[in-house]
Image (cartoon, rainbow, N blue to C red; front, top):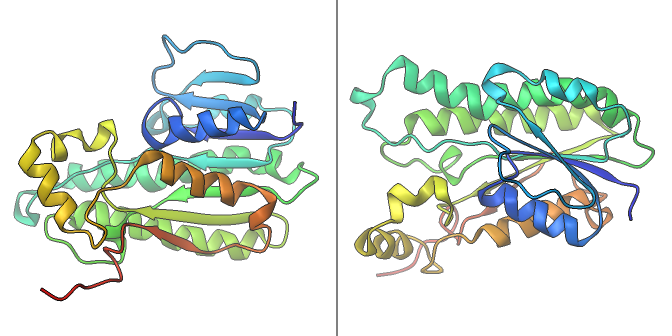
Length: 237
């Protein structure tokens, strides 16, 4: 089994679960956290830790060995007209998307520095951070902060630690179910994308795995738009 160890925060559902599956097939040692790890089958090379990032990242202080990568997957989808958004809505998105990542990276930095290779951090933004969309004020603000954090830490942690982010569009996960649960909703969502489909969590995970591995050894400070062309392509009617 590979001696490399990767931490996946929020790794029991959605994109995070797919990241764990793909890394497990590559025989990485994995530390997986979630607010609820009940029912997770123990597998060789996977350690589960119950942790709610809103409450802090203290459980990660117990990591004694080197970390070769961190993937931070927790996110939110809060879509409301701006006039109906409360301070609590903005605070919730900010705490989970940005401050949660800050807490995790602060706790993991000593272990990342102990790695004898060039460890990699992968964060998650959103297509809405750089593409203006109605009803996305809170999540756009929070994910915009994540992109700023990505670039700042890539500069601060260079040359030893690489930091990048993935900015998906709407992806077929449990978090997105309220937006695609009805057939008409799903078809409208597909139609908004130049590729006429929504995101697949396995595809997002493959990009995350690429950024963790040596193939991406010369990549840092980048935001990868995996969004079916939504942020950059306009089709003629």
